[in-house]
Length: 412
Image (tube, rainbow, N blue to C red; front, top):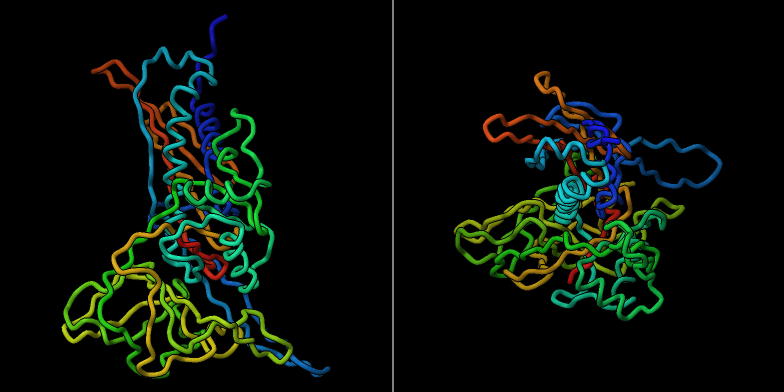
């Protein structure tokens, strides 16, 4: 009996299933909002940051102002994979067609999605580990879990995504890690190393590498009281500007987006206040990430865009105090050196929004499917010159670090 012709809906459903099976980062982030949003490329979706309160003493009610801001995710990533095939190939079984075409195509898309999320490391300000040293033990991995604990991050839905070098090094020193198992498991399952220090650990080649800026000079804070209120922090990026000087006196690139630094005597605070409304000062300096490349002027001055904002009071307090004038800044890593940015994160640290693409009227062979918060469109056309069919799989999506305080970099 001849095979039934493969339909566009069959291809789209199979492609989404294969895509989901091959995701690592994108399977561990917030995707629930995708079904609540429709729009085109360049559109945005608004997400509210969680409200934080102080605890009050006594029986008398103390009402507090509700401080909340929203952040926007721009849906600007348009990706596709296309290929040619003969008309006869449409008579294959869906399993044969998937092995020959769909699986290789969706693996490419899955890697693209994962790289987009992994690139959000530049928004993550907490960092642990030793620059230039591959994490290779339980202790190294647990340092990331410890920082998540210190930031009051819930222990459920935690992920540690590391590059293969770190994964094999940690696994080699942890005989109790789960084995990969059956070779027929999906790529997603094969990437799973096991649970370690409250985190599900995965190996992925899509961990990004960061090159520290050229730096130069002795950077200092230029001006005291450079702190902001929650109302004045930039809601979309959770950031502020910071005026610095002391850089090498020349107009040149000094810092890159993703560089991490500390400021003398500016300590981190416990994000959860005590019963007096105060936030306990932590025994380590607050870390900041640079959000945009920055160049000094001829006199060595440079205004940085940083995250988190320096907030010294209230429910959204981030630091023990504002930096003093001429306070020293210390950057992580060696200038112009590359380091892997492994990531430990809670599901709500990052968001992925996929949007259903419009269906063109002129295409007869077309379908659009949604599966677990992912949306994909398939279109086929005929090339009369070469007597071949052309097919493409398309996705439109956006990514954002919506709560970067729920993530930690584990440097390698």
